[in-house]
Length: 353
Image 1: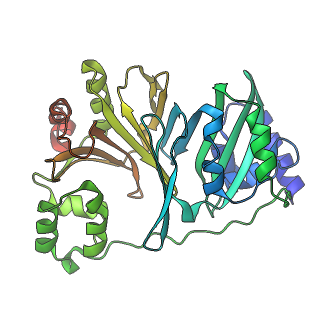
Image 2: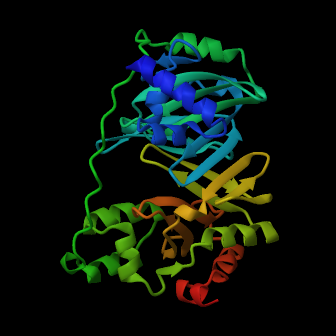
């Protein structure tokens, strides 16, 4: 079976040399981790599933490129993996990197498979560490750059190499997301009051869980000053305006296992087919605008004042990306960011334009 999969993948690559492995997996109807695993023994080494220890051992590489993606957006940030922190939050195992360049929120219970990958590319050998969830979807990848300590790669692989080097893995399907409960079953008065009295943006998700409200369901029912649907070019408009006046922004992109954050300017904005791209020296973003189903501007009260975000969703109601103005706890939101968001028209106005 594994040899068959490897042959099928090699044949696919020969016929589709420019397609990414994620797209190849979808077309072959396997997980991305299955395609990586079938190459074990050649260009791939299976590592022990000790993600916390491996992540804590990345700093000696120096500068690397961190990549986190979902189906519609890829977030790439260069930097050094400094100061990892891991802790329990209730039943969840949480990880943090909080640095100017590498800024990650990690949900470690989903990290199930780890591989070291060495690929021959048009520009030479490309080495990476790749982490996958229980279903075989990629949660995070770390690529060496021209400024990385390349010799350390073999040392790290030797330290964490798994005894199991079979070219096959076992994956499990995640249960489907539960449907939102009916609007009529929700205490909207209590929910709106809770929203009005938020003290921290991190309290928003627990508030949704407390009232059993879906994120988009909340936006559609609260509206007014807290949530406004805008055109699906809202993220593009925000980044174009931020680039025009050099406003620092925050760009969050994630999946079930990892959220990756860029804080700083965006400058070089490029269209390529359906993809809207940021192509800066330390930060790259690739957003497939054809996959955007809804875009909302939201406002959440905090102890530091209102925090405004642009939130982008796919057709399944999953969040693709979120944009904020640069801020830290204890600091008010940038007025320049509020002015940017104020220039994004509501959906009705955007459609009429």
